[in-house]
Length: 217
Image (cartoon, rainbow, N blue to C red; front, side, top):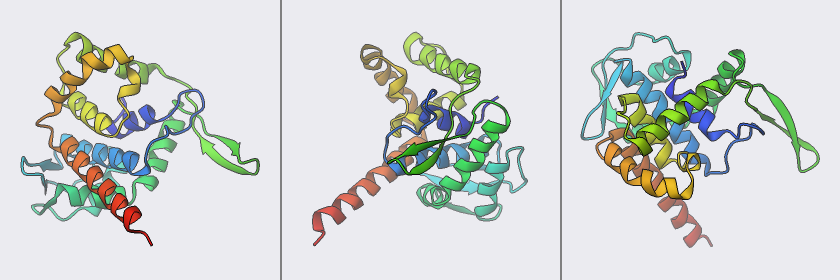
């Protein structure tokens, strides 16, 4: 069974080319970070409060080595910090976490690692799909939830919220389907603290970048 961060990465990859979808770099970093933190919440190692605080409940390692690295970076048991700060702190290491997650998917023969050439002389790694059975099942489940009214689980709502605010969900639907799905997304995720905090964080990053660009020179 795929973990949340693995699902996010698979949604971000083109199945045939294995290249990352063209989206702002911070979006994927925050999507991966939010998914890892929510994995820890679902494993009862931490909890997110309604006022967007992250409370550390238990520092015992989980069965996920990548999530364990995140857990080690957080404060001690009983301590709390703003969720936005935890996301920023985790996203600073998101690329390293992503490499670990991708390697895990390669080891399980879900993806394969290849090099592709760009600008004639440079090479970069890509991860084409080998076994799409699990990803296809997940995509179908989300379509059933958003288009057919199937009852979602907590993990489903978290995945929907994170992938939506990071622009990874819409490609699963046609334009007509998206018009039907989007209102349901907002209904399901309106009280979902993680996705709302990610959205706020990304908005602030965009505002900061716009400020720098506008005032450059």
